Length: 446
Image (cartoon, rainbow, N blue to C red):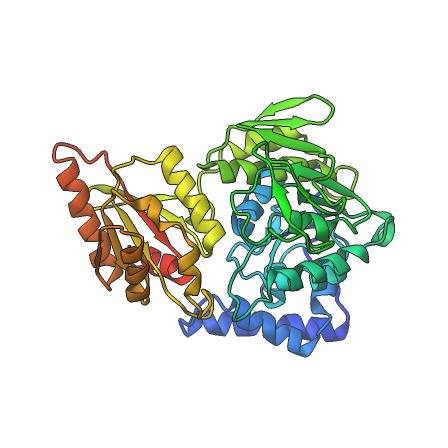
């Protein structure tokens, strides 16, 4: 940001002031007791004292919300990077990935009272966050099945999004408007976002179609073309006119301008996330805190980003590179398999780790929708708390594998497999793919 820094504090009304003190105190106590950062429990305590605390903390800020089933954390990190001016006040964000209201409150406590905020939002809470924060930008990535024991069926989420976005004021809160940047290639997102007053439709591709085969408008069949276009075979519902779209690694605008998308994160799905960010970032232009960011500047800043919250990072163990990848549902695993085919060594051993805790969802039946058959020919090690469920699925996929319950022992076995493939060098990496808590477990032990 340019110009003088905004004041570091703002006098809050009595009730939210007390709520902030309670949340901050619990955060500190949690850290002192070694029970974690306290971001969630502190935020919950603050909201218990003042249920409107998030709205108070978000007042007078320029807010962007990022939601969708896959890619929220990465895209949020990308948008923060795109909006971050050198030598300026930082962008406030929920970097820990706590993406429900308690985490949002925790992310804003202690930050400057005006400025830019970028929040990752759980799909089920998007409507509430829109009402509380009056965002300048809402980025919508995709919708697919995920954690059915906690999150509604996709069609229920679509209806809730559609209702919330339809309530957006065309002028906006305080005279500013909300721009929705939405994935034009996901019929569920298009149906939800089509009620919003102002939408930038971005064609970024969609690798997973199984949750969008039925038309949300009439119930008939959605037909997906090889070109990426789609339409209902009965009613007039189809892909809208796009503001921008990806052609390989080039972002093309409808007015003919073209921008190379050369970024530091691997995979076509991350180029898709970058395209959404490149369209979203300039929409902050003209607001009272954030100077304009061009598409060119946004992409240039993304080229320097090589990991987000440890995802896509590479660590070393016993002289071998271990690439850390996270996926949580069939759509995410399919995209990660695409990444392995695009940027990985086809002989690299793979460690698959599955847990089924609260953050993961208790139901592991989704494993049967993941195309594990694509791992045939690789040396695969199954691990995690639900490694036996995973092993059954791999057996039916005819993937040769070993089962090692302890995650570090599983990684070490994969390192041994890599060594046998490349005795003379350590050039062949090990690919680690895990869902939420399995991913976090390995990072904490490495």
